[in-house]
Image (cartoon, rainbow, N blue to C red; front, side, top):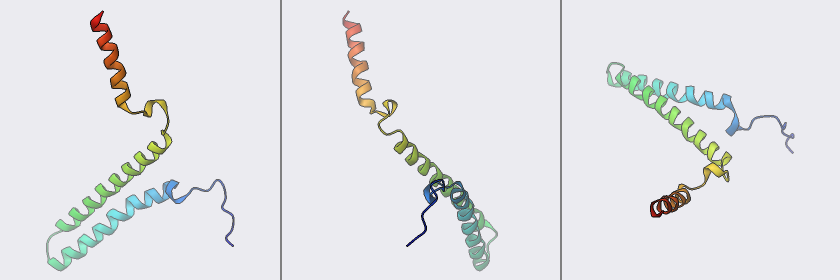
Length: 101
């Protein structure tokens, strides 16, 4: 039997520390991997920069997608989150009414 979870404790999907660690860990690990491959190949730190840049871009892309997913869940059912197709139909009706008058 596990201990009851504290109600105010953040979940892993809602924890700023885990987001921050992910944004630091991926570029760091990929940068170290790039340095290791550079050492084997004998090139200058080209792969270190390439892999670290890919890690930074991946971290930010992951943060953006997680943010968009959380916002989509939060805004579900809100009036401003309704489909745009209904708004286009209603504005089209209004503009045709104005043109016919």
